[in-house]
Image 1 (cartoon, helix red, strand yellow):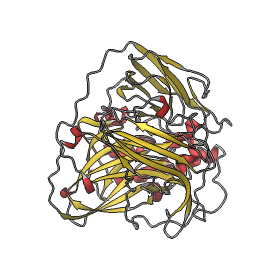
Image 2 (image 1 turned 120 degrees about the vertical axis):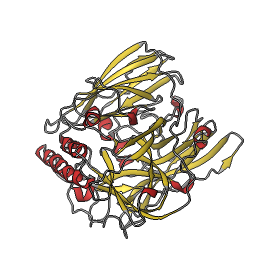
Image 3 (image 1 turned 90 degrees about the vertical axis):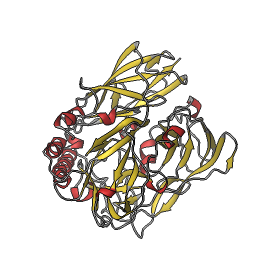
Length: 513
């Protein structure tokens, strides 16, 4: 059971105000065993609190009426198209993607101008294999520079897609991914500095699903029973166009899954694997299955950012900040045909009738199911003895202060400055603290996956014990991470992956040599 102790470890029962509202009420409700629907009502207060805080800070909604509302659960879930390689060799697959503007249907019966990979919103999926090279030629047909980062990938600097290593309009760039890492749910997104926030918001992101033979042998749900769920939020005007304003969490209240607003999915009464990706700029999700009653509906989390957990972790709540991924399994055979389960979101900002629900699962008839979720999923290597310890403080100008900058260790990003010098082959412990009084952050490292050792001096919750590249930090919270730098050398960034914050300066650089 998700106890109050676990909630405190995640920083979700105290100290989260402002942009995340009264999260404590949500988790007190959960801990008391009340239904997710009731918890969602508590999240309404969180959303209204955040909106009020934004208004008090002088943050007004952009001019123009909002788009007409979409009836929740009236549209079927679709999955992003899978990209086929245009060439294959014995050791590599070759792809070509064009970044271009396109009119896409997001709200029913309308066309929205989006920035896309190959005209798709959400972008196309690349399916890759561990040990087999993927070569992607990215063509920039936009009128602004871009940079394509494979989030979670272990790649040389030249193929990392750094914030200053951009593709000029009309030019192209070939990225080579050797895939020398375990299978995991990865994703690609734009990383051109000062532009990445709006680029990602308007659509420049896609899936990169890496599989490996060890995972294939486990017998997990696969094929059409292995479904990605890419979450994002948006603010639409009356003409169904996306409205972008920096750091505007309060008005992005249309929740999209794979580019569809509040969809439904008809499922068979059997096990499914879902791959959650939070591709939002700012929104943190606290998710739970709900049938509207007081019954909790735990799921089995099997993976996180960098791959499978050592063992499944049963939890009624999935917490996902921007950039993070969670793989989980739901066994719908436990439910009678005709059951409708809502994937509820229990955290604001925004009105519950909009942000308090994400999608719905409609359970059908029982079907044959040979898939399994074994008690042992993967073997995580023993932690090496660290030789260096470092501390990092995340902060930003608080709402109402008049400032609009964000900092790591008191400094905004400077592309000409190296902030951290690291010896290749070393193992380090980084203590990362969110010093902001009212604003949550998270912390993302390029190149390396890390392990969470502690949260506020306590061991991590089981669902966070695997490989991670992004960690959520609520105001005042501290996480201790262990990282080993034994793959590539060069200069890589680390930053807040609430992307508006990194665009405001919460980013720094490490040099591994």
